[in-house]
Amino acid sequence: MAPLIWSYWGLADDGLALEFGHAFQSYLAKLNAKNPEECYLIFFAGRAPSDFKSSEILTGADFADFADVQARTIADGAVHKTVTPAETDIKTARDDMWKIFKDRYPNLVRALDSLDSSDVDHEQACAAVTGMLDAVLTLPPDEGGPLLRYIFRPD
Image (cartoon, rainbow, N blue to C red):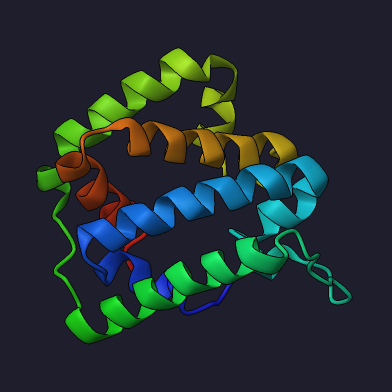
């Protein structure tokens, strides 16, 4: 993951935010299956041990495709700086996402609610984020795009 993605994903246009969302969800699912600890550390890099080394989950064409959509998302966000939606603008989409998430992943609700807890199970946390992305990406694009940009807005 390019660290710049966290600064620009929320500023990219909805189409690229969704395209990267699909690629990122697929990446997280593959990573969580092989290395749940690393998957968790994508979101909490400050908790990684000093000797931490990332693994190579994507190779060849998969890596090239992921790097391409990531670079295009970063570039679009940096150039266009699309205005991040306000919380009131995404409320319906967020409510719809929660309904979908709770229906599909009832066993992961607690993990998603406690992601930043130091004692959360890392495999469950990564699965919860992957499930949350799945729920967002199920929404119509005019709801899912703004919601993704709101969730992953820069601080």
